[in-house]
Amino acid sequence: AAAALALVVALALPTATALIPRLLRFAARRPPPRPVQPSTRQSLSTQPRAGDETLQDVTLEHLTEVKEDGRWLNSMVTKWLDDEFTAMDVHGEIGAEVERIYVAERKAGTNDLTGLLLAMGAKLEQLDMHDAYVNGWDVANNVADYLMVRMQRETCACSAQPPEDCAGKITVGPKDVKKALREYDNDLARYKLAVEIADGSADWRMVNAVCAVMVGFRVCESDGSLIRDKSCTPEEWADLEGVPDMSDCRDVSLDERMERAFPVDPELREGLDMYAKTVIGEGLYAFLNEHGNQGDRRRLCIVRWLHQLSFQEAWPPVGSIPSVPRDD
Image (cartoon, rainbow, N blue to C red):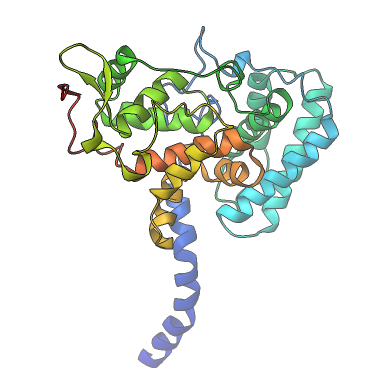
C-alpha cells in the first residue's frame, strides 16, 4: 500500500506543481468589477460620476471601420490572455465573442463607451469561460482600455491629452511646486498620480512640478522663488537649464536622461517594468510598449523613472527638504 501511495504521489506531483501558478492566479481573481474609467481601476471611484471625464463622455464615432476594429479587438484580447496566462483554446473563443459583441453593438447604434462596456460585460457573463482565469467584466474593462488607445491613434499623434500634450510649453513656478509638495504627501496620492500619468489623464503642470522637485528644484525660503539645489540634483540632470517640460514629446533627451537612472541589471529593470504593469495593467502596458507612440512611451518612462527614484516611498525625495535658503 505504501509503495502504491508513493507511486501515485510521484505521478501526481509534476502535474500539481505545474498547476500551482494557475491556482494562485485563480484564487487571487477579483469579483466581477463594475464598469470603471479605462486604466484607472485602482482609483478611489469605481463608477462614472457626473461632471468627471468618464466613460459617458467618450464617443466611439471616430471608429468608423467597425469590422476591422472588431477583428483588432479579437486579436488584442486573445494575445493579452495568452501572454498573461498560457495559450488556451478558450482565449480564442473569448476574443471571437468580443469581436461578435462589438460589431453587433455598433451596428445596433451603440456609439458611447459606457453603453458598449455595459453590454460587453453583461453578454460575456453568458459565455462559458470556466477554463479561463478571468471573468466577463475583466475582459470588458480591458476592451474599454484598448478602445481608448485605439481612439487616441485617431485623434492625436502625441498622447492621450491633446489639449496639453500638443500645445505649447507647460511651465511651472513656485506655487505649482508648493502645491505638489502638499498634494502628494501620502502614498495613495502618489500612486494615484502614477496611474494618471500612465493612462494619460494627469495634469501635466503637476507632473512637471513633481519632476522639478525630483531633479533638485526647491522654493527659496527668503523670496519664494524657484531655484536649483545642486546637492539634490541627480547627475544626469545636472547640466539641464530650467525645469524640464515632460509633456514635450519631441524632446527625446528627456527620455535619455530618465533612462540613464535605470539599473543595468536586467532583473532590476524587470522590477521597474513590473511596477508599471501593476499601475496600468499588463495587457495595456504590453500594447503601449509595442504599438504606442512617443507620448505613450514618455508616460511609461516617467512612471518607471519616478519609481526608480523612490517617489512612491518618500516625498520629498530622501535627503532633501521642501525649501532651501539662497546661497547668495
